[in-house]
Length: 137
Ligand SMILES: [Zn+2]
Image 1 (cartoon, rainbow, N blue to C red):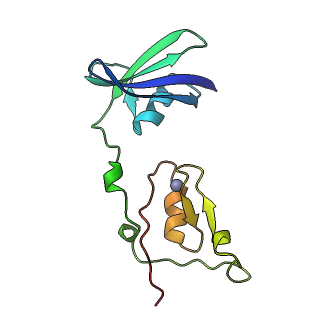
Image 2 (image 1 turned 135 degrees about the vertical axis):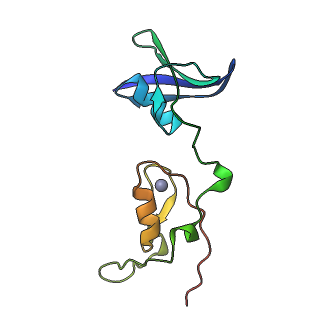
């Protein structure tokens, strides 16, 4: 794995930059872009990947339109359908907090009793889910 500095560039402006650890620079750009990229930076909007260790610079552009979800349009829990309640062996956890784990991908707490949330957070790429208050019927 190599540490890459990935800069997202629009025109002459760096709009974001961060460190991505990946096997190759193209993958590092794809992780940042959230989609496939092509190794040609012909577009106004592109990614520059700097491998400081090997003093190399790569440029990539989007293959398709920027499809990254707008955080203002996060998937709502109810968009995933009706609640699918999982059952915990040996009954509910004694402590409410024990029903949650923290997603390794987006860092959001996931309620293990709701399989919709668990499935959502199983996806390799996803955004936070908007949690809604669910009334027990
Ligand atoms: Zn997640």
